[in-house]
Amino acid sequence: MYRLLTLSVLFVLAGVAAERNACAQMAHVQATGETDPIPSLGDSADDPAIWLHPTDLGLSVVLGTDKRAGMGVYNLDGSEIQFIAEGWMNNVDVRYNFPLSGRNVDLVVTSCRTPESIVIYTIDPQTRTLENISARTIPVGVSEAYGLCLYRSPWTLRFYAFVVDREGHLEQWRLFDNGEGKVDAVVVRAFDVGSRSEGMVADDELGCLYLAEETVAIWKYGAEPDACTARVLVDDAATGGHLVPDIEGLTLYTAGNRTGYLIAASQGDSSFVVYRRDGANEFVMKFNIVGGDGVDGVNLTDGIDVANIPLGPLFPKGLLVVHDHDNTPFRQNFKLVPWEAVAAAAEPPLIIDTNLNCPIAGTGDCTSDELVRLDDFCSFVECFTGPRSCSQMGMGPQCTCADFDCDADVDLRDLAFLQNVVVPTVNGDLDGDGQFDLTDLSVFTTCMGGPSGIMAPPGCTLGQFGRADQDGDEDVDLSDFNAFLAVFGQR
Image (tube, rainbow, N blue to C red):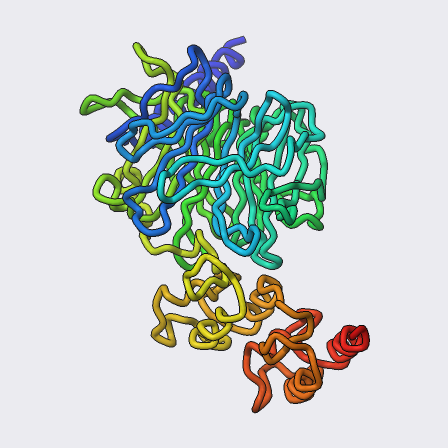
């Protein structure tokens, strides 16, 4: 009996010590701003996202869902610009430069629960307001449009939306131009993740999807539609983990060289857990957001988002946005935290990298006329570096338009992507004269280098080489010649 009592006391003391250790490791940061309260009463605010303005980052906005009414658009000082009351919107995410009817638009996509669907918007840079560009009501196959995040493949440049419901059923939808100026979607993958899940974020550079199974763990999956459903544990809510259920929002702080941080909302103890983005996602730190300077603290957070980009004078080192459950005496809202406050709270301090790091990948619109067409090939050639990096060649941000795969160089891989974006005015018109004739056949023979032809041969321009590579495999060989002749023979 004495031995059992002694063991019990030891276990209790160990638990107390562990609790004190956890408290000692908890860092504290303050928000410096907050959005206007949402319209709905009760537990209604849910998920934020940050949209980056294309020409003036100080005009960027925060988007925030109201799961009983719609979605708000807010200035960086927290004031409301617009509220769209178009359904019970749960999660929201943003991606840039979606090709739509010959121009590039930014996508704001939400999971909507009335009806259970995906809703697709674009945002007007002039007015900073949302416009619905869904081709139709896009009903999801899961029981409830609950969690949502977007993904742009670094290999195919296709855009996808992941949707997961309360039972852990997940669907991956490919977004596409329906040919009439609207965006439609089709399911390309579906599988079960185990149990109730909501928080998700996709890494567009590394091709992975992070998912929070709320009472269990954070998992890492492959994000490509043909990826297997095997998963890797990042952290769990069991003994030894750093999370207290429910595990809610996830977001990625992207830094150079594919580094940065994965951040998770640990709702059970109103904290935020930071992991490395690279490697095995090792634990880095844990912090909470306390009140001060007229802005109250944060508790029971659902969604979160972060941007490393300098957003004007209010957030020159980047911004973390989090949902706040208890905004007494007002309705719920979203708190705004300078990234440098989070970085300074860690020991050693976290990375502060305010370079673009390609959250907005190349679009092909190198002439900045909001269209992608043949004249963009000319500017593309000026940026072409081959396998050497743009920084090594002394090239600046003007060449990011050509870096489709975000690997800091402009090479044949990017040329293949550009070929897929630029739609020929006349099929087979290799010399760009608007005609398809014997001159194009001559151009093709000049560009033909066989399966080992990794560079455009002498006399063949990069634009001609990209158009002659019919199958997009970065060489011009017999396969391309057969495809070219098939088209030529239809004249």
